[in-house]
Image 1: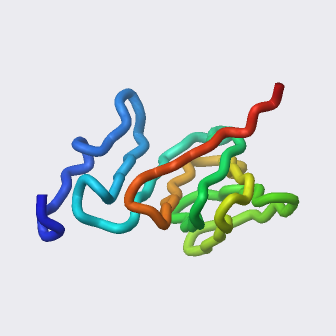
Image 2: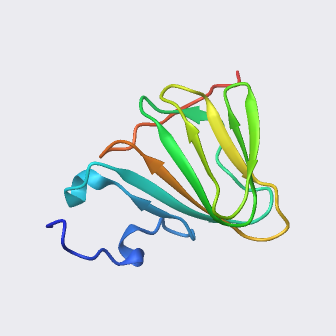
Image 3: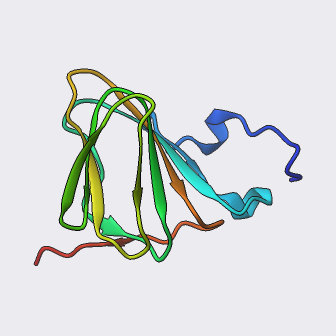
Amino acid sequence: MSTADVIPADEIRIAGSRTLRFEGEAHGANVSFFLVTGDPGQGPRLHRHPYDETFHVLQGQATIVIGDRTVTAGPGETAIAPANAWHRFTNTGTGVLQIVCIHASPVMIQEYFDHS
């Protein structure tokens, strides 16, 4: 596929989810992203990547834990988790959260924190 092609949302939607997962390598791009649409209380568990991840809130409110810091971001606001920093986010608003999670890599590499 060339970089000029349009990728329909249904082609990158995670099965049974409202979330889109785009991995750039398959499309000739050097970045990847999740477009997450989640209800209050939802969000990924603690994880990290060997590259930066940038979060941009489109709708709602996200509480983002990055290492030992916790920030709250709303529509139009951006936060960055540096490479290898443990992080997660949660929809702490009262409505739907829509957040773009940009991975500075053509392939997503994700390591989850083991609580055991």
